[in-house]
Length: 422
Image 1 (cartoon, one colour):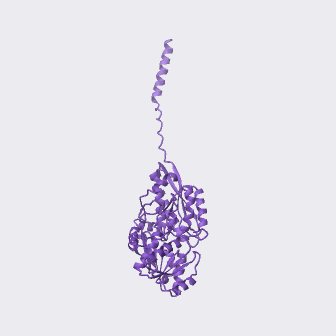
Image 2 (image 1 turned 120 degrees about the vertical axis):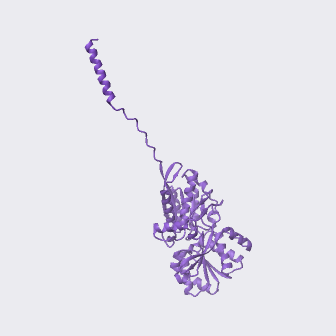
Image 3 (image 1 turned 180 degrees about the vertical axis):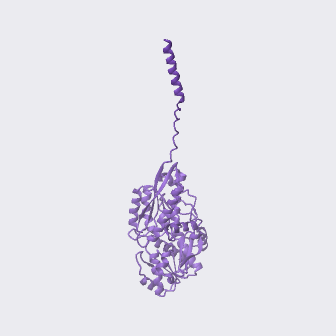
């Protein structure tokens, strides 16, 4: 090779190498950012009366469900490695059995994972078959007729004591604490009202009380003067009513107008602030009612829940909002343990629940009833409901055994054509 050409090639090669050395090495490939957990939406149904005379109780339940869902979403719940966003689907069953079945099918079609509802036993009982057929778990925050959980459905639960416990507890309180000897019993001809009254009546008779009248009205009536006039002539010590506050309030007011001096007692359907508004402070004073559960202020999570509810909705808890809240949390707890939001997979876990809720410990027996659910007796004093005493079911059963008064047999549910009550 020509000497000059060789020198030129060498010089060119050196220049190229120097230039290459002066360049920055290409950056290493960037590591991929970790993928965010997949977010799935899980729908929780809420079914209760949102219109009509019982709407104040139905909205109260829906509000409890809403609070639970908001708290769960704020906690960024993950189930089976997936982040879950919960969504409430609220439906109005109008406290009507026929509408309740329509609502149940609507929730099934919306592909909800679970349902909190219904308020009324007469709504929960027919709706429960639709949920059962679809394999969707249902927790009622309030339905107390025993038949609700006696149908054999694996999807059916409740977080309150039932009327096979509540009715006899009321009767024993009437006999032992009030000393009642003669009683008139009125019911609103619904699954709840009739069932509660029948359980009360059976235990009252076993305790030696005389039933001087047994009357029936409906959940639509507001004029009870004919019934009360008939009862007045029997001079009972006590009138027991199985029904809801829209009837109980006017009934007590009309008792006062007629000069009836008998004491008045009922169940959880009338243990509301609305009852006092409807009856008036004077007529309501001294009226008594039972409710499944501890006094709200004495619930383990009661104080915090009541404050949160008041802040959120600018009103006081009406009745079953804490139970609606806990029903949602029981569903979520079962989903976590199952590692799945699929109803077929987390349903078996609901029956194994051992959860500390706002209302206290929650566990279910083989039928889906709340284990060891307490019952509290209240009285109206100074325009407010005040707790008188709380009875645990085991204590009630001991009392029943001692007196030979076992809980009465379950009353048949009211016909579907009749408007439903709890």
